[in-house]
Length: 529
Image (tube, rainbow, N blue to C red; front, side, top):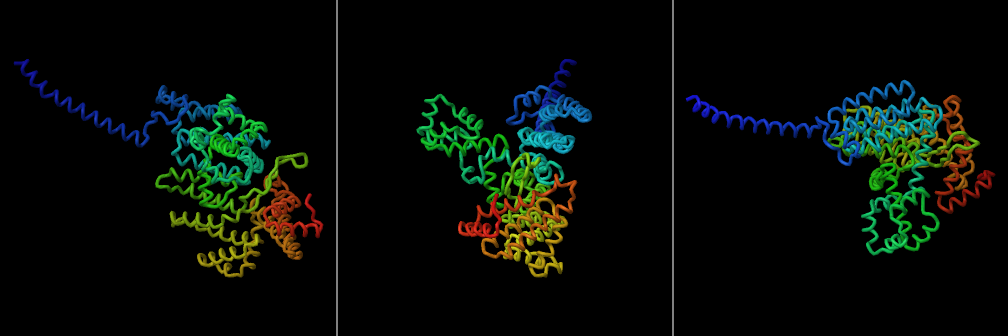
């Protein structure tokens, strides 16, 4: 009887146990799915991760967090002890151990670019740490987390603020270094970005682009010269050596390979995609990609692309602020490194007035996304006021009048009812008192540019008046910032600014107008050095 009873109980319980196990399995599977979808666990292998990251992810499991915490404490102790160079390796290890912990990476990058860099006095030493902060996010963290908008924001911020603004005494050196690096990769300026965007991106695309029967392939085979070795030679010489250049020209591929190799160099060294650059230029207008504002806009745009619903106020703000800065001083007129005469680099900008409409559109789009944000409305109003003044002093009076009418339409202040010239000159007086480096440079060069135009047209009295205003603005700005901040915020010497602006005018004016300007310069005895 007992045996029969046990059989009955077992027959009843076994299906229940099987049902419970099956139900538990289904619940566990569902929980695992939710954990993976919501990224509640950090054990999945990251796509395209280096072997070390893949190994630590699988082998160490949850212990990675403990090791990362220990290294985190070590970095703080090393910083207190001034052992900065050891911090670089620890920051890289922390990023590899906890590749999803983007907040830690962002802090480590910011710490190196801001806190560690300013413990050094030499600009080249500071730049080394600023650049390392950029590389930690751009070359490491974003490889593991290409879908994290926070990393794009932090990277863009270093370009916008640390390189673009004048808070750091070495900011001119940073701008010069960025321009030097870009010119090294690009091989010259300007760049046909549309051509670069259409160029092959890898060896397979190049072979398809040229065709399997192109003589280049047999030429490489005959010389036992792999394409990768040819590319390495190109980078070592920053171009083709003379003997290779002649042969490639005869094969009809010199220019194609030049764009191909430089495009790959741009992607690998600076992580910039030529097709994205071309699209940004189409959307906003031609940027000068040797300057930090363009890079800030690039990375903020990448952040918006991966943000939820494409909305991220910090990235949007970075875009219109950087556009505003590019409008104020977003074209590189002249740059050079330090020499015996001047112990710091010279970087001279002029406003990029062609993007003025793009700046206005960016403000309006952000206001539409965030209608209750009054700070964006206020920022747009400040931009419109400055746009009127800048356009006016650069001789774009029709456009300046258009923006003044926009101010009258959207804001009720009575000062906007003044005539254009009266409003612009009043604003100019106030702008000089509040101007930052880019704005002051733009004002000086605006009047110098107008001087060149008047000289070419034979308006010598008006040209002299324009130069007097330019010189006065230069003197007032330099006096108001004080000698103690000349290294950080000071403008280039006035004669140098005048010479460089004249050279630029001679290059871009219509040939007939340029010839008249040369004649006028000889007439007044203002010869170029």
